[in-house]
Length: 238
Ligand SMILES: C[S@@+](CC[C@H](N)C(=O)[O-])C[C@H]1O[C@@H](n2cnc3c(N)ncnc32)[C@H](O)[C@@H]1O
Image (cartoon, rainbow, N blue to C red; front, side, top):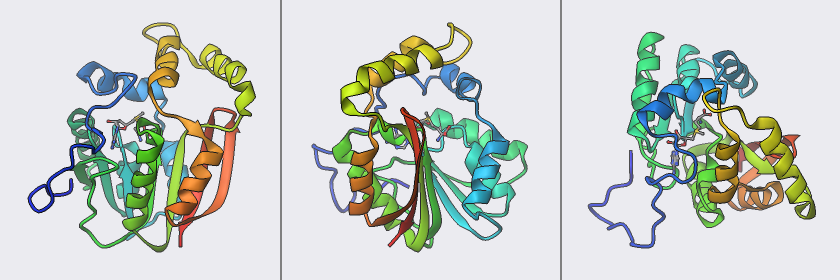
């Protein structure tokens, strides 16, 4: 749940994380189309959970859970699964997904910055395709918050649009990404969506995230760049 305002008023300089930037993902139409556009694949989510060792009794928090596929798959494995998202529309979709699968999960309308984990410390914290919603200063705060909800030795998994190309070659790599990933209107995320991502969202370089993760209290176990524009970090909380 979000941090309480009762004892410590929210400073006026706090980032407005409930006002997402860039591509529209929060409207009812965007939520309904999200899984198709994103290529959400419950089997792939399940394979990821297997890699992360998520099993019965594991306490998992998925930050920016979106339509909830990973959380529901974790609950299907018997995990105590928490999904956190700023979007009420996304959470409604995720709750319905859990209901269809006849599993119980915990849903929290909260953000990277203000989610307060009230349960016992988590074994696994995940976040996919979302940390880029925050500018770098706020990413660092989000990572500190994620570390704070994990037990020592717990796992943090981050997947996102992460740049591993040489900064001097940004132009060509970004063009290639837009040209290959953009779909015609109505068939998925479009060129205009990827252009908006680059222009208005806050994807950053892997080497910047490496420093942030280390400063947040994580050891990086594995860093994999599937392409020059996407990457994943597997981390252990010190
Ligand atoms: C591209 S979707 C990713 C959803 C899901 N993790 C996935 O892998 O499909 C980004 C999600 O981040 C959520 N979001 C945006 N800013 C957020 C924030 N500051 N804290 C938590 N969730 C946020 C959006 O509502 C949206 O559901």
